[in-house]
Length: 248
Length: 314
Image 1 (tube, helix red, strand yellow):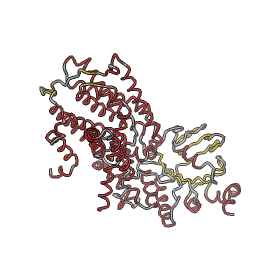
Image 2 (cartoon, chains in turn brown, yellow):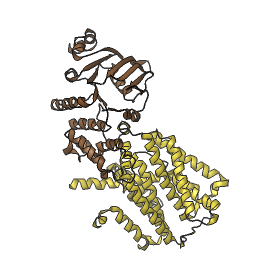
Image 3 (cartoon, one colour):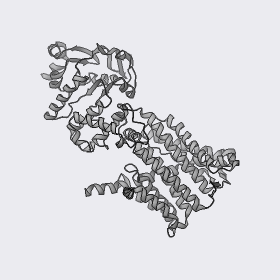
Image 4 (cartoon, rainbow over the protein chains, first blue to last red):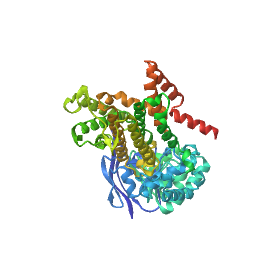
């Protein structure tokens, strides 16, 4: 079963073609990682999928529905959500309120003008559930700006999950994390993939080859290879373009 | 009921009730009324700036439009002798003007948003200053009087003061309820991180439009009451410096961190403008200097200053 069906996707920035005629089907199962050397167009591809950028050419279908050029707030409603490479939170709010913002929209409370947001019990309950699942319930009342970086990464993920997505795209979930924190996030992503389709852009090869069911390699904005971790590791073209250079 | 004493609004309301009985300033009833109108106006402005992060630096437009609307409604339509009709006119025109501008600039941000609002104010000023037939042009509009409301003679300044006080009470409670509501949290999310807000499904432009319209309605209301207070309408209330005063007062008071910031700021501004100015012609020098000093030491204004102190105590 295909989830994303991408046809001839192209994005140019002036003379640079950041995404070059990408045609690809993404299945519903497992974890897909997108890798490629710096400047390969990973982030652009990611931003096209999540509606942050509009493609110049091509189409994106999600579960058969055309989502090409949809804005972020519309993309969300199809069941697609994303996290951010640089943690993107509501810095002046508490941990709990960060989650509340998303939950109240999903539950339809967002336009209630005369209901004190902390009295919206359904929202609070759902938000606390999400925090508990991520092991952050004890931090609920701390300001988001004050908690450690690893926890902020997890909170970012929690906030992304508030929209009840089926598919979640993670933009460099390991960036700037310590070894212990990496382990924690890896476990979380594995757990997440049992119930969600997970698409990851990541530089951390241990993570990519450790947990991915499929790996997509981009090079100069185009698809260089796609396959299982074993196939990609053995692919000579990939080695030449990417792994070879980095490993050597 | 014992909790009510912990509510700052209670003390603010109490202060307002006592105002006409205060020694010295109590004699200047219209000053007190103007202060109340400033409270409403700056609270409505802060829905944009403090709550949603919209730098609406031309907010005086909606205040001024409210004033003119009230005057025109009174002079042209109020043959029936209604006290309320001009006020409703002010609210409607303030809301419609803000909705019009808000829709046009809902996708704009930062300095572009700010400049568009300032330009809009200038356009309003130009229209009111030139359109002799409707706005009276340079001569403005006069001959407005405060009619009886439900049999109560509003001509008496103290009665009108308490009428404005009642309006302020309602506005303050409503605006605070909104700012603490689910909708208020949605607006907060737009201010703090509009990109993330979009990725949680919020159509940020629509929220900006909605809050702008709402704020314009309250601004129009305070403008209409100002028309009834001065019983006239002149183009100078649409001057862009008036909008600047609102921004300064709100920032000085600490509107970005506290709901009460605009009230504190308005209080200081109006006191300086009316009392300090009678002592020294160059009062703006002192006001401006204290603005610079306070905001450079405490970027979040006076309420931010208190908040920092309270945190240190913990």
